[in-house]
Image (cartoon, rainbow, N blue to C red):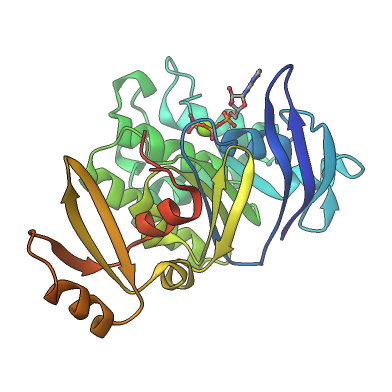
Length: 279
Ligand SMILES: Nc1ncnc2c1ncn2[C@@H]1O[C@H](COP(=O)(O)OP(=O)(O)OP(=O)(O)O)[C@@H](O)[C@H]1O
Ligand SMILES: [Mg+2]
């Protein structure tokens, strides 16, 4: 559904993307995980026609993003990182403007808006002004607006940034539900647990480069199965082991205190990049 080949983007003195290539399969939830400035938003902006690329090619639903722009644009819905709703208008009005942009006839518009607002649990607030909504409601409205024209691909740029853990989980549930309808989802995040919980496959992005792509489980297995955290002169050191036996042999020789745990996706990101993802 999404194909990207050797995509590059250079700003004046910054190479924001350095020959990025990946494919996202139909119905897949693909997470693009990386720290601030890694190039996540730049990738989404290029794929959705908001920024021009420096080099490379990309296709959405088989349509080239430049050569078949209009067809490619019909393939996707987009939820931007920053809130871009009309604050002075109601929920319904925000949805209605968007539907008009897609030339949906009036009767169909009303039916579809009501259906999608119920789906994201905002139907009872449809006449509220956007400025009166909480951050979580605004995010749900942005997602509703992005899927009202039934796109095959949904781009979500950091959909839960700044939300509390409870609301974040609610948005995760909504994203999973949307995937179940057959929508292909491309999601960027710097929350490790978001990628681990939601993604079928994850790409680790670091300084404009993809350093690994695989299922969360396989990425973790490449690092190890067991991890031991230990304080070493005020610095946390982590060691990885592929069997419990090897971890136990190490522990038997230890005099300092330690924590034994399972390897998680953060360990994997750290071992591929040497960096922490949370900024
Ligand atoms: N319009 C621009 N002009 C110059 N540099 C830019 C511009 N937009 C982005 N950049 C640079 O490109 C790099 C990638 O930025 P991008 O916004 O894609 O990162 P990101 O992974 O989305 O980060 P965040 O997690 O903070 O949203 C950064 O170094 C950024 O400063
Ligand atoms: Mg960004």
